[in-house]
Length: 505
Image (cartoon, rainbow, N blue to C red; front, side, top):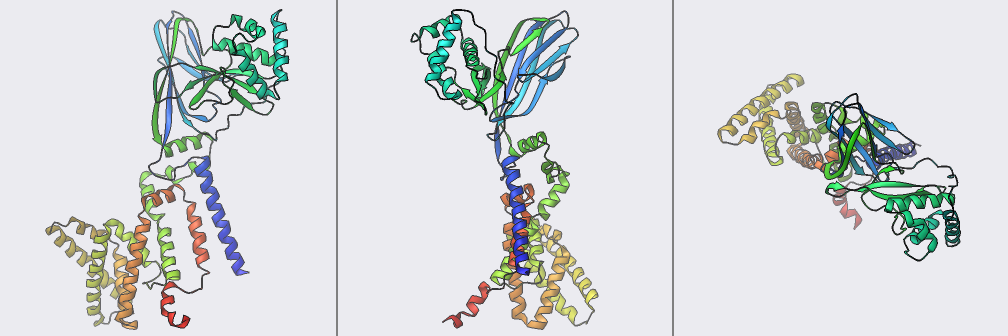
């Protein structure tokens, strides 16, 4: 029963850890590496017009539903204007208003977007469009064309592809020529196509998008076709009928309405510019989580003050050192002083380089051990003896720091930052083992502690692992699950295989 309970607890801990990790990584987009960046595009619409002298109201169509893209932030820029976002039947628009303005006016709307293939841009299911009313001979041409296209298609998508193909097959169909006789642009053609699709009872609308290139100073919105097949919205190239949106194509607005209307102004001009940038993925993920109102990021370590974050960046690595300790003692079989003494020694090494840490720590322990044996003759009690050792350690630190400074070895100055209690306890434990088990076992345990401390230091000093644990602290539950499973390990240790090798022969 106990074994099954341990296994079940380990599975539950690992499942919670991994599921939370995957959610924060894949859904919220938190980076698994510290140097990970996300490409973003800044799209700016600049508006210029001659205003006044009366009131002005300007409405700019802005991105709403953006397939495969999300708006990270949007900024309206204007001087003296009030601004707000309105939601309409076809999307959103930015409205600027001012009571009185005269002369040349400039308004700006800036949106920062990033690619997100998981972004759900689904819209509501539209009703079947009402049958459009055509005059003759256009009515007959539409009826004949719809009948012919329906015979060569199987569903709404294939009907749309076939219709677009026929609309661009110049001179092949007199009905198409009649319908296109008044068309002067791709947008005009798409409006005719949406009317024909409405006659076939297929919901359709025109969409306008901008190609996101590295840098554009004069981007021109391109029209595209969007239809609903009864289940979802689908996109089609208006020139060849191919399904799908092109790469790096940001849908800006939908419908036949103009992108900009200005009441109270004249000589209106609008220009779109695109600039590609790279932002820290973590910043993008935090913005995304804020938009989704996710509490996991709101209550993350990144919400703490910077100084507190620095403390926890060290503390969160201690379980990694503890895992190394468990593996080395319970699986490998290396003897040490105490249970977590090597982990604390590894933390001491963070104040210096590893080589200097080993040298300085070994020197302090050796000198302190010599003083400890001299104090043994005084036959002091435990607490006074430890206090005496602590005082000696402080004096040794002072001497080493002064000597290293005189020799130009500035690294030796950081020895004063070593945890004095750790050194004092190490000296005391080693001296006690020296007396009880002999010098050989004491030196062996000391070398084992130093070896595990070096391994733990290397594991705890991995920058990518430190970032991973700090960003996804739930992974410590996985470390806990591994430790719990190792707690049930009662098999041979690797060091014992050599010891009992004779029995296997």
